[in-house]
Figure 1 (cartoon, rainbow, N blue to C red):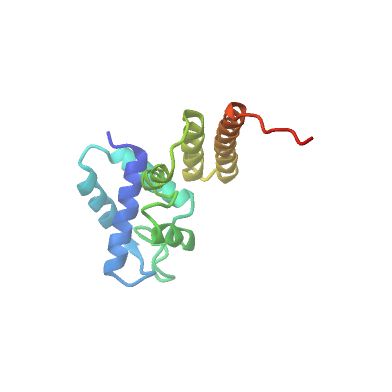
Figure 2: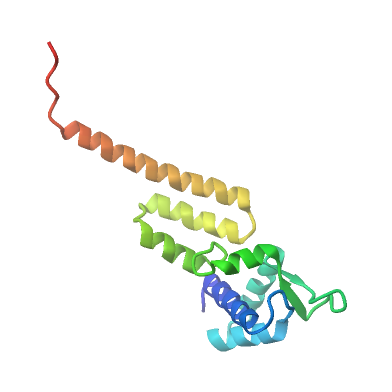
Length: 165
């Protein structure tokens, strides 16, 4: 089964592709986005796609309605929060796969820092922003402690400096 973060990336990419073909801010149709998502992912992931779809509305990336004349499903639009995520989709936390790929291309993480950053990303995707901040802080602390340990080790192996008389 496709991972939920991969499904999320595909849904967001489909929305981005459909928006680039139409006018910015125009309403989009639920059936066309879900149909294209299923085509790209493959048949058999209905529940995972629907759950991820719901999460995008729950966390404020998408909202129902195209305009005041069509305020209900199946029409929806991308919110300001969603537009910011789509602007840098390849490495935005809204796209966990792309975000992690980008992050891991910049640095190597120890296992503790990696586990905290990945859990923090799960918190962010779930809309638990304070919990995400705590997890990122814990990841950062782990990396800083690793740097400190390297500095202490280097200082310990360095020859002592001569004392001034």
